[in-house]
Each structure stands twice: as C-alpha cells, then as structure tokens.
Image (cartoon, rainbow, N blue to C red; front, top):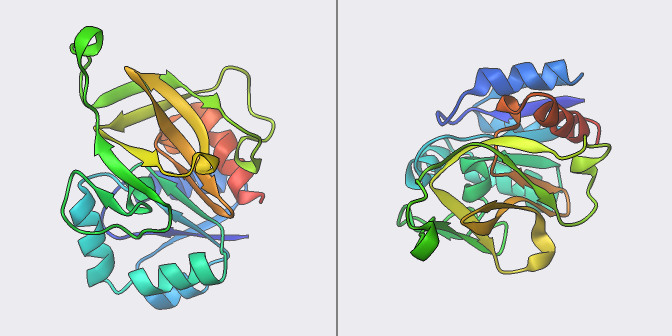
Length: 205
C-alpha cells in the first residue's frame, strides 16, 4: 500500500517515511500535484507556523489536489502536529484560513490560576484518553503515551470528531477522526512503540 508523505517544507519528512517502512508500508515523500494524485494513503506532517504551512501548500499548488483526494475521493489521510492544525478553519497563530476540512479552530494554550505556571509549549511525553473506538488505536498498548511539542491546540465544534483528549492544564484534543480523515497532535514518529502502532494501524486501514 503506497503511502505518500507530503513534503511542503514543514517538518522532518525522513523520520516519518522511515517509520511507515518500519510499520510494513511503502512510503515515499512527494511535493508535486502529479505525485500526490497517485497516493493510496496520505500523511501531512508539519512543524512550524500555521500561515507558513498554508502558504507553502498554496505556492506548491497542493491545496486543490489534496482537497480532491481527501474530500471527494475519501483517500485516507493522517495529519501530524501542524498537519492536524491545518485541517481546521483557522488558527490564532496566523491570519490565513486553514484547509477547513474539519469544523474546528486552532487556539493558543492559555493558563490561569493554579495552572498559570504551566509552560508553553506543551513539550514532552503525555498520556491520551481514547474517547471512542477507532482503527487508529486498534490493539493499542495499555496506558498509551505520546510525545508532544506544541503551543496551539485544536478545538472541535463537533464532539463526534474528537478521538482522544490529553490533560495539560485543560483537556485538549490530542487526536481526531472524521471518516477517513485522521489527525494527531502528538508525533507518532517520536513516540516509540505507541507511535509505531498508530502508524501500523494507519498503513493497515
């Protein structure tokens, strides 16, 4: 099963390609509409600023082909970190509209009172609470923990899209699913056996 990792200049593509291969999948990175057109599955990774991500996707002519693959053809896609945030309608980090595939917005962590001393970004290992069954977490190990690095988090308008939450001062959305669209705020490629299981499950959809 061919997995295309979208290379739009925002993130460590090589480590994700390597993890997909470790999980038994065939993975290549791609940065042109023609290459993405052939994808059987897609991964949209990302590290960095929201507007930069959207601008890069636009400049490379990838927005339309991704929308066609994901929304019209229902090609499975996994968004990771910034990739997840780009699925939303907007972000407080920037002024440009997001892809808008999920009825959600991206907001900055704000802590008050007893949580005022919590650091932003939220960085390091944390647990997730899985909200409902999903193929993404099939046969997951007990007490799963994942690696996070982010200052912004996604707020879903439709609770049915929330796949898991994580506690960091507040309960925030750490993964979501809408049909064949999946996304994680954490980095599976940095999350050892737990992350490998997520990637295995995505490859095996």
